[in-house]
Length: 307
Figure 1 (spheres, rainbow, N blue to C red):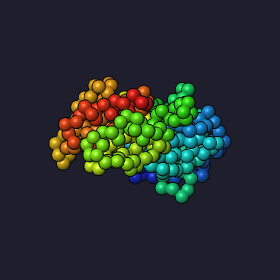
Figure 2: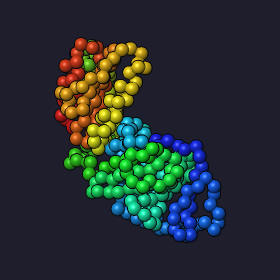
Figure 3: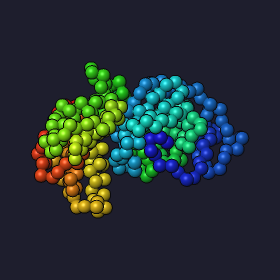
Figure 4: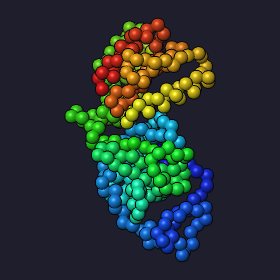
C-alpha cells in the first residue's frame, strides 16, 4: 500500500463461510462459500471521518522511520479512504467495515487502476489518537496490537488536534520549517562561515522540511510527527547499523543538551542532530566545517525551542 508496507508474493483469497467466519486461503472461494456478510454497508468508520497523520510506526515490533509512512495523511470520507504521503503520492481505497469481531476492523480495496493491495485492518480510537494494525501483504486479520512477525502497527493523530492557533500543525506537516531556521539564526551561521547571501533551496511546509544553502555550506531541517521516543530511538539504531558502510569514519553520540534520547552524528563535514520535542522528532543536518559544534548546537537548540 502507499504507506510503504511490504508486499507479499503469494495471492491470498478472502471469503466468509456459511457460519459467518472470515476465511483466508491460497485458493479462490467457491460460489457456495460466498456470503452476503461481505456486502455490509460502507459505514462504521464515521467516527474516523476527517484527516489523520501517521505519527509513529512499528514493524515486527521495531520502529520504522520512513517518509513513505511517517507523516502520511489518512483521510476518511464516507466509504473512501485516501492516503497521501509527504512526497505527494496518493492512493484511494474503498472501505468496508467488518461485520463482527473485536478489535473493530475494516477492509480496504484499492481504487483501480492500482498496483496496491487491500485487506483487513484492525483499529481502535482514544480521542485524538488512532491505532491501526495490519499484517504484511494483508494475508490475515490481526488479532491485537502487540508485536508479531510481519505485523505493522501505526499510531495516528487527528490533524485537527495538531493544528494550533496560528493554523500550523505542530506535529510536522504544515509547520513552516524555513521560518524556524530563520528565527534560530541559521542564515547568520552560514554567513559566518562564508560571507554570501544564503538562499532557501528547497521548502515544503506540507512536509515540514526546509533546506538553506550558503556559498559552501548547507542546513537541512526535517520535522517528523512522532507519538513517542520510539521514532527517535529507531533513527539512532539505523545510523548505528549503517556505520560500517560509511565512506569515512564517524561517530554517533548522545547530545543531552537537546533533551532525553537526543543524539548527534558526525561524519566528515556532516553533522546531524536529532531530538524530540513534544510530538515532533527534529532532524537538523549541517554540511559545515567541523570544529564549530557549539555554533551548530546553538542553532539546533533555538529550532527546538521555537516549536
